[in-house]
Length: 314
Ligand code: SF4
Image (cartoon, rainbow, N blue to C red; front, side):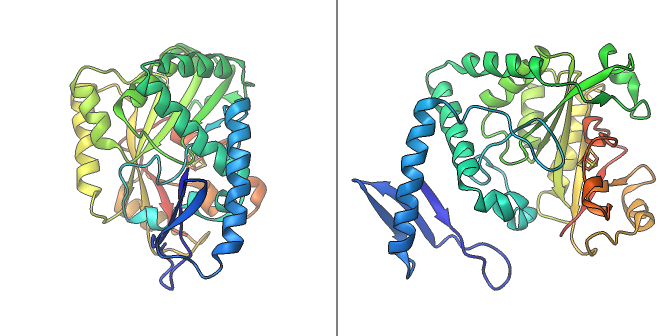
């Protein structure tokens, strides 16, 4: 078991100097030891004991909730994020409750460890079966909004009945190709569930589609881009390339934009930059906390290259 200790730097980023690893029944700090290491070693030892309990009991294997969505599959930030860009410096999954709620953070790490073990043992279908059963049992929430381009959607999205909604990776990402393909299969096996997958792995999706993989009809993929960032053009090209091969795929872009103050976003300015169909995420603009939810919006479950979702950075 190992981790990164990252006190915020004066510039607001994170500092990777303090990493730790449990080895030979002790905690090794690398390469520098924080001044209050005794205090942290005690805390880490408690977490290691809790991790062992949860690993043995299987308690870590579960869906989770966020303030915005009901059904999420959450993996550790950084540890399950092979591609990172400028937005990741301020990732919400590295701060607030994500950082402070140690039991939930442990479960994220244990889920990644579990998936990696199954991949090594060529048994990922064990997790896929668990996930399919779990998703077929989650509660239906609301009908899929008719305004969101119903043409390319499966019939179950159009019959006006309440749908089940799944959001992959409120934290973490597609950490390898086998896992991404397993998610595609889970989506195929749960046609009555609307799936939303945000990712920075545009290149991986493109490569899978080039090799013949089909993006399931009930899966909406939003490739996340830091506007003006180092990966912006590569991600845009990846989405275009996927759509060339699979024009009906529901894949689009979401942009993280630095600058505008929280909840004071000028929609017209955003539309001038990103097109008239661009949408600023209502969670960012809603004044009342009760309105900062995906229910009633569901834009991210209907990815469309012509209707990017904008997240002003905060
Ligand atoms: S744009 Fe809509 S669906 Fe997407 S995260 Fe924001 S509220 Fe949720």
